[in-house]
Image 1 (cartoon, rainbow, N blue to C red):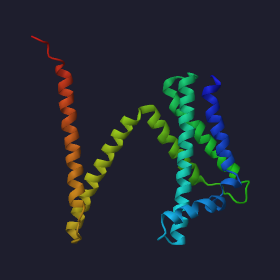
Image 2: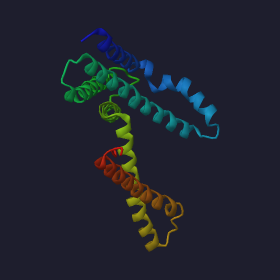
Image 3: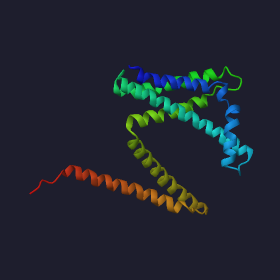
Image 4: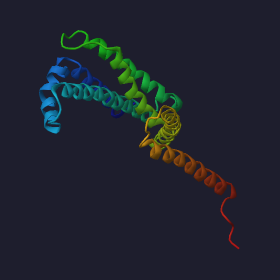
Length: 206
């Protein structure tokens, strides 16, 4: 495997390790991030700002490990070091393994704590990256959209029925639930029409 493929993920792993020291502690990130959050949300209470700060840090976990998984996927695919079918799994395993080592490393700093929850969050970011990289963002977006439409349609229908029985007003559910159902129906009709068109094939000129 050429250095142009494996050097980027290794450098990114080193950067993650550096941020996992005292440099990336909540105390240090709060010194520059909290003033920014306070400027963006002047109405927020200190407790709310602390919550946003914590969520931002967790979002950083997802992002940095999604990038790492993407870099390893690129290295394995471009370097052709393994079979294409195994690249996604290996990239995910390498990234998750580094997340575990990273959390263990953090336990040596008084200002940091090792957390299994953070490993799970890191793994989520890695999984998202390898799924998108392996399937392509269009297929992932399509499947995610269908999933959300089904959740909205079925969950909204159940909520409408429950609200009707309990006398609770449904409000926006009367709009979102039918829209999701029509979206699923329209998608099904579109795919059926597209499938029929592909079966017929191009019409020969007379």
